[in-house]
Image (cartoon, rainbow, N blue to C red; front, side, top):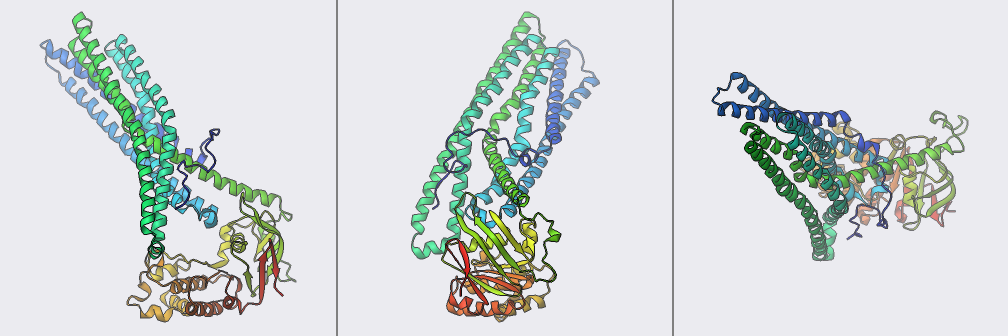
Length: 582
């Protein structure tokens, strides 16, 4: 299992760091008008309920005096009670709508980050990203879209109730209630400080557990073959126990707050109201109806404060998650700014439209000019290299594992910015062209093919949505797969299963080759396409690649000799250099 880091922060960051403001994409996920509208709904509900309490008290006094309750009293009582219920329902409905919109925005944020950072930067944290885009987005949305406005209303609406108590019952009682209400925010601040670490630990523990579980599901076949299933299950059970203890600590804090708010705070408030009402009635300063109004108003006063305790766990989990979303958005900004800096310091700051070769001289399809490459905060892998691939040429890129071949592929696809030098794809400087525009001209067959859980036709039409069945069959024929697909009972509608589990490794790879053929891009980038298959499968793949490579520029990253027999040139990566093999 991977190294544990349940804090939700980078390793080695245990010491206290200065607080970083939330990213604007997080703070703007909920419009201020939506927050104000939710607060207004809750204020209106509290005010209407308070006025209904006053009318009920006046009705009691009228009835005790032998009077008859006028129709106006019934109308106003039901009017204020109904308005309170309607405003409360509007607050709940608007809160749920806002949370749904906010969750969608947070998921869009993570999706944008996936495409901006690229698979190479995210390959070691797929579980964390999945958790952030699903459960994490929901938690952060409930926090920002519902909890914050409810908290603001809960802290401010008691002021409305206290004013009604002052005008309708007694200013002395109102003053005492204000003193009691002040305890709520002070208590919340104490709990906020004491639970921040628990919230971070909870999010980190939950993310790590989910990542480990997904990792185990993905490696289930390998675990079974290696006989390591029980050992992995024990590790997973241990992590689950750690997560359970983290949840228990979190819930202990939440239950302590609920206990104080629901029992101590509410009980003290009701007892105080009862004492003030009874004393006032005995002293003749309050009528029984006004004393009843005071008791009802006190219950209205403590209800929003009780709500804070009931939903406090949302604040703990949501606050930690929104910090993770903010950190992700800032990472995207850092990558974008690095790209802009590279463009501003480029030796040829020309617009993209001018990044073409002279008409008298053919522009290479791919070219590296004095390029230095390395991963952020990592060592330099390639330094001051210059090489090119001409249009229509087939070139193999070989070298030991970990030497930098896949890094070259990441640079060409626009997933990684070179530290210096110039990289051009079809005459376009990658510093100026967007990664998406560069990738439109590339058809890529990866070492490990990813197939989506759908039909064979669905996976092919990802790159050619309008392709007919005849075109799909042609692509499969080019990939040496058409006969096998025809033998399946469902043909093109055959379901490939999760990650292509119902296909063999060779079939999955040839399906990826058919997909590359359908894309009809001028450049074909092959990242060790035969490394995961046997010799028979390799022969079929090599033959298919030979067929679809015609009239295309091909850069093949490879180890096996058979895969590079038919190339025009061989480039060797080693010692931070790329040199042509003589």
